[in-house]
Amino acid sequence: MNHRIAVAPLLLLSVSFWQPTSQDLRTEALQKLRLALGSGIERNLQTEFARAQDSAYLIEMAGRRGGLTRVGVKVIPTPLGWPDNDLGWVVFHAFHGIQSDHDPLHTLIRAAEGPRVGREIAEAVPQSHRVRHAALDVALLPSTNQVRVSARLDLERLNGEKAPVFRLNDAYVLSKASVNGELARLVVASSESVPELKQGDVVQAGGIVVVWSSAPVRSVELEYVAKLSGTASEKVTSAAAYVTSNWVPTLGRQPMTTTTRITHPEEWLAFSEGEPADPANLGFPPRNPPAGMRVAAFKNSLPISFPKVVAGPYQLAAETEANGKPIRAYHLGPPDAARGKVQVDLLRRGMEFMEARFGAFPYSSYSLLEADTYYGIESYSYTLLNRSISTRFPVHELVHTWFGGMAPCSYTKDTWNEGVTQYVDSVLFDGNRDGTLQGGLRTLDVAKPLSQMALPHLDGSATYFRGAFVMKALEAEIGLEAVLVGLKALAAMRRGLDTTWADLRPFFEEASGKDLAWFWRQWIENATFPMLQIVEAQKVFRDGSWGTWVQVRQTGVPTPFRLRFEVTLSAGTKSTKKVVEMSKASELFRIDSDFEPTSASLNVMGYALARTGEAVPIRK
Image 1 (cartoon, rainbow, N blue to C red):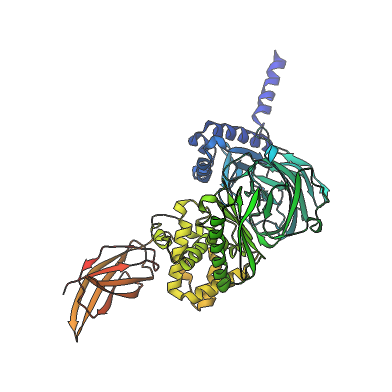
Image 2: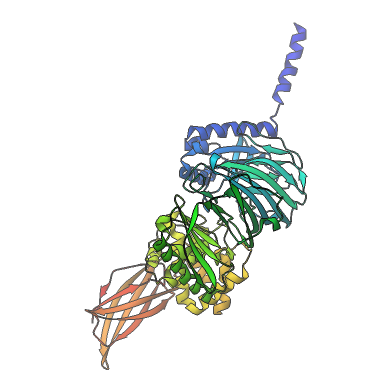
């Protein structure tokens, strides 16, 4: 009896001092997050976050993927070299289309109530390496809906000791990995347990691949496969193959050069960015294609962020040339020569327009490939467009070769290239026939600055229309010639450098000799726009002509904007206009006319993102 009494306190003491290990807490978090996602209930997920607001993007992304139950989760320890004051990382993952959502990567932190999901680690966060070149050996297997990839990534060490963290769509499953030419232990994280990792490992956790090393990494070789059985955007079927979305491991989607070898059915044509090349001269291991298959190869010396592979039973529909460069249209199945002629004629005019203003096209030819299910994407030496839009948008995609290709955009911070391309194509080339500028004014209620629009097709595609409108306003501010000079310099000097709206400003300042900081703050980094109204309009007849004083007031912004707009005086079929500038809350403008005006109105089209009041009568 006494013996038992003596032992009991010792047992209680040992239990009271037991603490879960970091691995225990990671495992607990994984189990809770898996249950929360499986419930499909937002509140259940939010309670697993230290701050509920940090789950906002994940919930939005899940909604676009079909709900929380369509999202997977993995947990890993914090990679070597990254801040280690947290428990680890949480990877929420789903399959994403090109230039769209991303997999949210969050810290896992200790809280009083247990492990909780912390803040997101942005995809664009600086890393210790960058990918300079990707050698991509691709096999398209329509009979099994598979794409098999062997990717060799040549890396450059930048600074710091962070383990490289690549992004890769979660449909691609790794089967082999080598680092610096040495075979590495490959660990594929599951949704059931948290892996324990050691120096030199390569781990795939949902949509990320981490080289578990703080030492310099010169090269990474990965073999992986995906089954793409036919979403609208990605597929490998008997009809065609579209391999475009996050299928090449990238570090922050930074631009890289590529060599690509494609093994495909012998009755197909295959395409990737760059110039056609002899596969024997690209450094790939020798390969004899299986019966019924053949090989195509491409070398792309222009660093880009989104390599792609497109293949199918394409047939030439039409061909022309622009400035000595062949332009071709390919159709799936029997070609439509009439539609093909419309396509290549548009591209010829677009090519001549672009080269005359922005410098030489960087490839020897350009092709348009029609798609049956895919919507559309630029590919710099070619474009892929759905048959239904293949005569509407070919020039837009061609313009992206300069703005998005030569000057790259990673779509991780903003989508400047969509606004600039919309301006060049729809406003400069096509004279605003599609109403792009009117569309820009319809974005006034979108409470997100251009500098934060990283997803091009959200917000009513505001990045296209508002971006084009702002470029037109810039034209009004510094002149068309300065805009063209700035854009040409941008395409020439930003090669291989991920570019954002902020990077454009110096080119236009240099071209115009003007300080444009205010313009960027007002129209690109801001999403609150003014209301312009005529307070009063009064006319006087003197010395044989009419003089009208128009009082204009701006409201709705914390401090007055610098504005440019038209004041129009009208009387029946007669009218006169004057462009004025305003920088105060209220200003008075005089407009002379050779007729007696009866009404005054404001027009901001192409000048200012602003609302305007109704026309007002002019009193004597």
